[in-house]
Each structure stands twice: as C-alpha cells, then as structure tokens.
Length: 513
Image 1 (cartoon, rainbow, N blue to C red):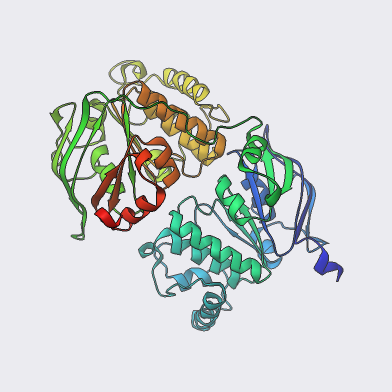
Image 2 (cartoon, rainbow, N blue to C red; image 1 turned 180 degrees about the vertical axis):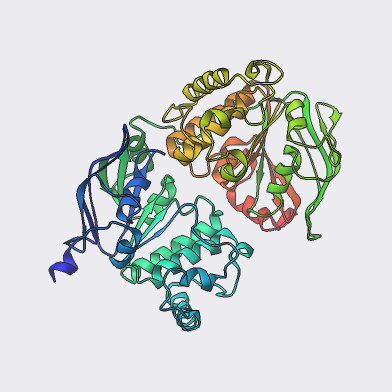
C-alpha cells in the first residue's frame, strides 16, 4: 500500500555541473503516479540534463533518485529501463533503414536468434497498438514514414520494454498541430492506463492543455511547482523567464514598398518524378511579411530550397527586378547571397549548422568571402571572425556567449539564435525563414519575433514558413496557404481565422473555405 501511494519519481538534491557550468543545482522534484507532469523552462535551463540523469545518460554529482518510494541507482540507460523508465528524445534514436519492428526489438532481443524475438515483438506490438491507439505498420521502414509515426515507434519501444514512466523531451517540436493533438490523445490514454508521463516542453499551450502539474526551471534551479488548473500562461512565462513576457506579437501595420521578389509559375519535380511545386506564383514587397501556412510536406520546404539556391526548378523568379538562374551553374546559395537573399533553413541541424564545428566557424558559413573576414587572398582572419561572433552572440543573447563552444553543445534555442544572427545581421533585402521558433522557449520566441518584425520595419521583405498557425497569424501581413504543391488562397490575418486557414490547408477552396 505504501509503494502504491509513493510518488512514481522523487528527486532529492540533484546537482550536475559540466566544468564551470552548473546545469542542475540542488533540484528536488516529486511526480505523482498516473499523472502527466510538465517541466518547462528556457532553453539551457537544465530540463533535458535533469531528465538525462533520470534516464542514466548522465550521472549526478550529488543527490538521490527514488522510484516508487525506493532509492534507485541509475548508472546507465539499461538500469533506467529496468526501473521501468522510458524516454523519447527530441531527436529520435531510430535506425533509418530498419523497419519499425526491428527498431523496437533492437537492444531487447531474447537471444542470438532473431526470429523468436521478432515474432514475440510483432505479437506484443499488435496488442500495444490496440491498447494505446498507436497503430503503425510493423514492416514499414523508418525512413519511409513521417515524423509523427516515428515518434509512435519511440513510444512503442518504451512500452515494449515495460515502461511505467515515460519521459518525452520536446515531443511536438517536429509535429504538425494535427499530429500534436493525436499525441495528446495517446498521452491521455497512457495516463488512463496508469502510466506516469513527464512532458518537457516550452509550449505553454501544451502545458495548459495536457498536464496535471507543472514544474518550472530557470538557470539550473527548480523555481516552482504548481497545479496546472490554478495557473495561467502569463504566470508560467514570468516564472520561466524571471520577467513579464509578451505572449503576442507587438507590431504596427506594414507599409509595403517596391516589389522585392516575384515568383511566377514555379514548378519542382523530385528525382522520383513527383511534382512538389505545381505552378506557384506570388510577390513579396519591401517592408512586409508573407506567411506560408500549410501542413508539413505540401511543398513549403521545396519552395524555400529553390529560393535558397539548392534545388533546381522551372518557372521565373525575379529579385529586385532581375531574373534569377534556376537551373544553371550560377544557381546556388552563394549567388543568392550576392543577390541579397538570406536564408534561415527549417532544419538547423541538417542545413543551418555543422554541429561538431565551433560557434565562430558556424557564424562564418556562407559568408567566408566577406572582406572583413580575410587577411589576404589566401588566408582568413580567424580572430576577426571570433570577434564578430562575440558581438553577434551578445546582440542575440546566445547562452553561453562562448564562440569557441561546439554548436552541438548549445541548446536548441541558442543554436537557432546562432543561425538567425548569422543571416539577419547581413542586412538582406529578402529573408527566407523556415520554422523560426521550432524547439525554442518562450523567452527566445519573443526575441526572435521581435527581430523579424524589426527587419520588416527596416524595409526588408520576409518570407515566413511555419506550421504554427498562431505564429503565422500573428507575424504575417499576408498569408498564403499551400496544399499539395499549390497555393490554395491568400488571406489577410484580420479577415480570416484558424478554421478557414485549416480548411484551405486541407485543400478546400473558395466558398467552402
């Protein structure tokens, strides 16, 4: 009876330092059995470090972990799994060319012969899918399924290993709103079955919608734990950041100038012969933000790639009245930068940064020919690049402000700030920006939105692609909705709503929308 009444997890006095950086400082936390417990905080607040200690990825310098009321040593992830803990990481730990079934079994085989293990797993997956609403094809190859389905595989992996406690680290960072809603239904199902869920997120809407209790971390310390029903987004934001945060975009009406970008009949066909863009046409003027709304996978990525110079296309693009080469040798990122186009890509890890390189090296990528970075024709002035990086890091509040730190050692929000600083500080005529606040905390979101609006007010043209409808609605001066490689319609934010945009995103046109 005492074990049943004990918290599912109790952390007492957990501390962890990485050199001079104190990631966690004397943290105590109690998580009730059979509840959904949220943990929020700015990027770099120590949330992921704390959960990595609980999952055995890191060893705490001090403190104690209790599982079901019993002191438990967790030196590695195998010990965590044995204690009934499963973790779904922000960046999935899946083998891309393995099937769903093979990924679930990997590391949990019953013996040298795989046949019996796979047969057992197939049977159990069928039962788990039915019990928790996690239907998925066990023979599907990971690289052929979407991120929402990949996340289901990660959850199934944990449940297959008998997890009673499930930790999810920024689970909706790569999901569409519809996929996020489906995830929430799955979490409610898990809770109803008696599982304990810890949800690490920076999205206050998710906290208010799905959690029972929420704990707030700031600069490595636990600052508050409150019942979700008794708090508000504004209160949580202030607890996270230590100051009042504006939860809406504060901007004046746009005053558009001359046309900067003209796109006419743009078409893209991939190497499998599938048409990804089907005759896209639009304009963007100086001093305005054109938002592109749509469910991921409907051509937005290809549009950014063509405009950014690393995808071939047919059609016509004019930048400041001059036509851009779409198929020849001069169609690349360098030529786009010379035309005054800066690009913040959708996936900062794959396209925006080289994670093993230091911050100052990443800050120079794409702009290494800048005269102020050159000592002479043969060598670069690394000291000048590092000094420039320090200035940009200070202006964009990158934490820690260390240009010698590898990009992989920054939190997601600070990685995004490095990419933003590199592109925005180049004073472009046109900024292409994809998913600007994906995986970014509330304080950084406010800052990023301010920088985008500032650039618009300075007379720059901005193309914004985001799957976050509230971001599109609040930032954009005009909204174009994409579906299946086409623009279904264009709306003014003041004259539309999320329901109408959602219908357009589903391919419903005209009067019906």
